[in-house]
Length: 355
Image (cartoon, helix red, strand yellow):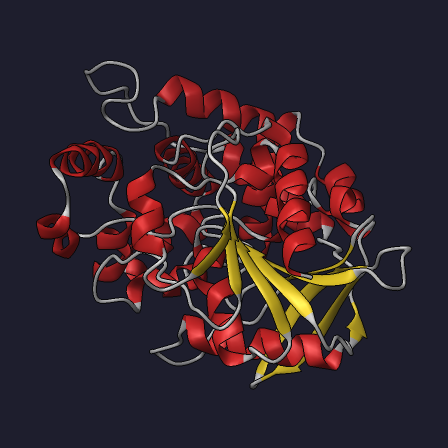
């Protein structure tokens, strides 16, 4: 375990500001508001703030307030945060971030959890300061095995796992590969989401629910299709133009329905930019054949932050032992960034049931 601190060189900050200042802005295409994508006026305002108002050094200091380390696992250097509780008997909790988030997803959540948990937040390979996979076929299962090894190295014999988005796939898989040590799995949502193969067994009311949900799921830019088809093509723009990278993140956070504090949003964007990981972070999408939803596991109990209608629970219970299924919790896709207090309370409530 090697102690780590973020220290972005001044030349990289100057380069970012210079590139933003020299952006070749397109004209606004005809259409209403976001109907053609991110509006020019919206992105110019955000880019101007990133260049002249956003204080990276203050955000860097905020991130460095968390103890950070790197270690080599399965041939890859892994960056992680490790915030211990003042309680020696606290339950270790492994948090896995989503895409296109980074470990920044949890910076406002961690202080709310350390009263009850020792919190471990690794950066997924290819994100931030974790080394990118060097061959095709890298999988969620491989990440889960790496996380189990990380928790063993930290000396944790029993622990919980939690995540949303990409983390909602990783968290159950950790229980699959390490059931002797994982006490429970908590994910933000998506467990039990129906597929086309489930339609034949649905009631008329459930089928109406499904059709409404599919309208929501199909909205926005289909990043799965784009990144399965040509991630290298898009990576040139993200790597070279901070405006292009910013537009991509703004589009996806909008598609996900998230309303995130501007400085937090730009801290996440800055981590991608300074580490050059917009392209390498897309591996979970280009190494999948089709869009799927988290299935889960029955090795340990499961809970969710946002359970959804009865249809979801019925389907989730095929593959999971559900012990926590609240409805009506606030927040969108990246709930840790939007509603950290509610998120922390729900995580704490779930693990109180299983530990």
